[in-house]
Length: 112
Image (tube, rainbow, N blue to C red; front, side, top):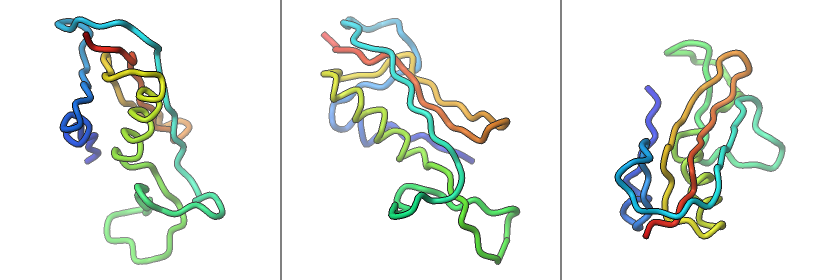
């Protein structure tokens, strides 16, 4: 199961919605952040990363990682806020199994 939890950002007053209707807003920018799974880059911590194991119950050593929902949300919300946005609408996440990438995208907006 993969969860992308909005609650932390909503508590801060940042709006996140998978729809574009029902809001009064000024559009700022389309944003898409893409994350790859694989080996941890040298010098980077495994914070907000999930270890990838070949199968449930695997007891060996794995140095493969994937982003968590929190890591993806932290990045896209941070990018949106840096542009002056206080919300993301048309928000979506996806996984591409062909190249092992996760993406999060949306329209950064200033809610009126």
